[in-house]
Length: 70
Image 1 (cartoon, rainbow, N blue to C red):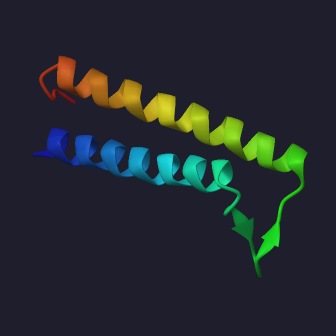
Image 2: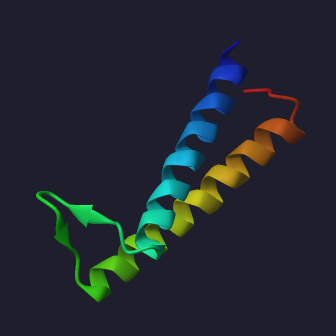
Image 3: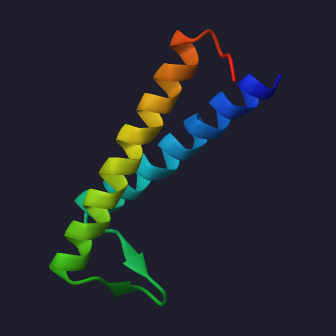
């Protein structure tokens, strides 16, 4: 059961971070009261989210390849 919960956690985080990337790529990513970030900060957010997507994908693959073992 614990392994399934961990897999679901990483799948949820993957969806969240893909959504952030999509919002950055489409110019819809804002903070606070609708402020748009400057180009450098947007690039940093995109880089961060891309790293998180890769990490989530790796964690999911690990769990699947190990048969869901903890």
